[in-house]
Amino acid sequence: MIFEQFSRIGVVPVIILDDSKDAAPLAEILCGNGIPCAEIAFRTPAAEETIRIMTREFPDMLVGAGTILTTEQADQAMNAGAKFIVSPGLNPKVVQYCIDSFIPVIPGVQTASEIEQAIELGLKVVRFFPAEQAGGLATIKALASEYIDIRFMPKGGISAKNLKDYLAYDKVIACGGTWAAKRKLTASGEWERIKSLVKEAASIVRNIRK
Image (cartoon, rainbow, N blue to C red; front, side, top):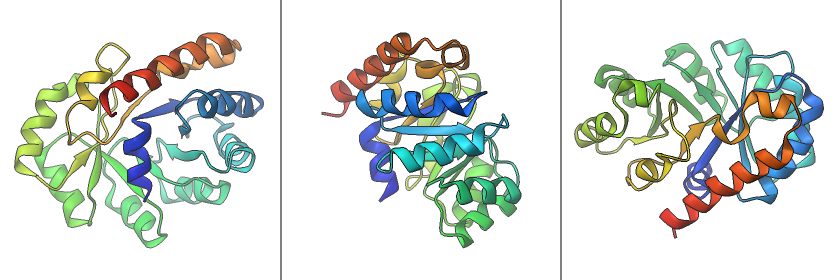
């Protein structure tokens, strides 16, 4: 099950690439250093091809698409090989389209009302976004106390500094974030720096989820 994979990996790097030529070297670093997962943000023209390259060259890697706002984008991502879909908010049309297409979808929520929408749609996992700006772990715990069957994948303001606090909470399935492979680092080819950040993230996950 894909959510079990998320839980084992612990971190979902959110990747924004301006050139798909960087897809393979980045995937190699992620897979080789303990974080075989990537959420490719649909914010650049290179996103679709990046998913296609990663899924083709690293078939065991958990590659999905993020910042999905329309059913058309969801289609593009799925056709490129995306194994999951993430959106910053909860658009019932997009969520239902993904459900009907048999692809895991994780919409963004902040409020109790949005969580209830997610439950109504049959979801068990949601993205809490933007996490730190919306009250962080304290807010997640408050919401989780009311919605005991929902698990969270927070993103927004999470880094190596607070990752362990989020992962230590059993209702947090994994954490999303850009810090391990920032756009400026990939754009400038700072692969050793990225490798160091990925290793650090993987080490935090191992220590928390032994």
